Image 1 (tube, rainbow, N blue to C red):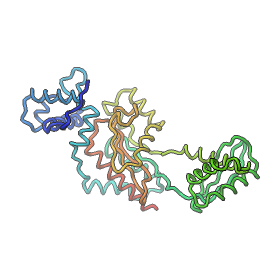
Image 2: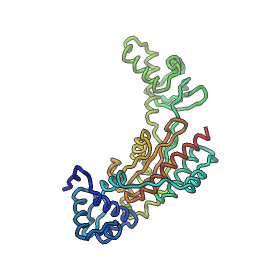
Image 3: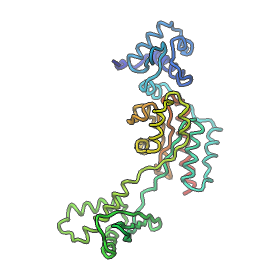
Image 4: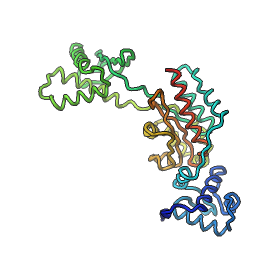
Length: 352
């Protein structure tokens, strides 16, 4: 049974030993014994004293003993305390910043190419998996909707945003609508737009349905039925991401079992869980760190994910990050992720 640490938190001695243990384990990947801690902690303590402190840390859930090893390794809770309390992150030096800026210098021919370059950069610098979501398009005002009937109850929807950007979508309807019915529906919806976004149009139509449904004629109800298909299809749109360096994880001892790698690569190829995690980071301020089970997704229980949002103008438009083992060099990864997010935003602003 794991007991909570005392209310006055860990003693300075316990913190120094925990830091030394985690730094050793991150570097070497081997359980850490009292002899190593005596050498590396900078404390003049006997092996017996160190073993007693380690027993306390294990009881409180910060470390654990794998198998019958005399040494100990950090738990997710230990890593969390280390990251939040003990870690001393150093800013990147000027040469590293210059190199990141050079690789994101704005010469890429599209935003997707720029995002791919950022993902590859994160992977190559950290030797882990780099992931970057494609920038979201800022919310635009819908200025026109038109419908074109297709075969098998399908309709082409032509959406015009801000009088210049055109998007085409194909929706599936419950029944066949004639060209005249589609024209009446588009006329009705265009009259409702008045500079609204699609989300605002949806809210207005729902309000009308609640308040005046009994008085609506069939034309109005048909228009709203067609519009609801646009909203339903739009809600399926999610973040997209580019990932690089997945194969780097094959060399990580904690992830090297065939079954773990298979499940992890399946998660990358069917990215619902990863996208959901990144989506949560969109609203975060600065770097977010999900350690092991904190992600909420079992497939990532042996991983840590370090993310940061990036901006275009004044708006957050995407998230980037690094996926690796919980035994990652956080003091290196965190400033790399933070600076790459900042410089990717600057590169995007140059393309506006």
